[in-house]
Length: 185
Image (cartoon, rainbow, N blue to C red; front, side):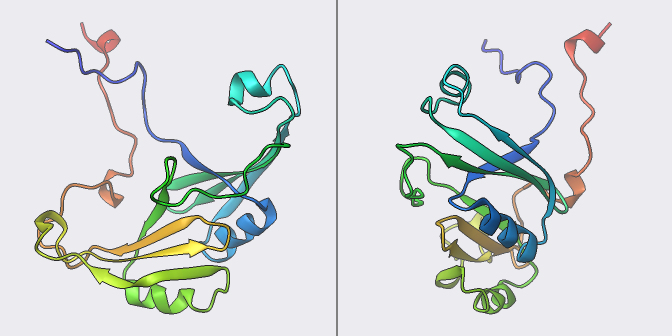
C-alpha cells in the first residue's frame, strides 16, 4: 500500500511568483488594473556563493522583488532579475515553464471591454464559451489576454456552469483544520 500523505506540516499555498522585465511597470499594472496592494520590497545579490546555490541562477545574478496582496485570496511576488545571460523572452503558454494567471469574474464581456482601455494588455482572440464536449465545465465563458511583457491572464465567468466541479472558492477561504499523527492518541 502506498502512503499518500502530504508533506509534513503542509498548510496552504502562500503565494505565486512571476519574473517581470520591469518591476515598477508590473507593480503599476497589478495595483492599478487588478487592485493589488504592495506589501514590501527586497533585494538580493549579486552573491556568487549564495545565488547559484539557493536560486539556481548565475553567480552575477541580482534581484529586486515586491510582494503584493491581490484581494481577496492571493499573494503575488514579482521579481526583476539582472544577469549577463538573462533571457528577455517570456515563455509562451506552449513553452516549458509557460503559465497563466486566472481570475474569476462576474461578466467576462465587461472585462474584455475594460481591457480594451489598457494599451499594455492585449485580448487574445475573443470571448469563448465551453461547449458540451467538456460537460464538467460546459457554459464557462472565458478569454485569454497578454500583458505587453508576456504574462498571460485568463478571465473566466463560471456562472453558467450547471454542475461545476468543486474548485477552490470563497467557501474555502478559511484555514483548514487538520489532524496530524502527533495529534492522535
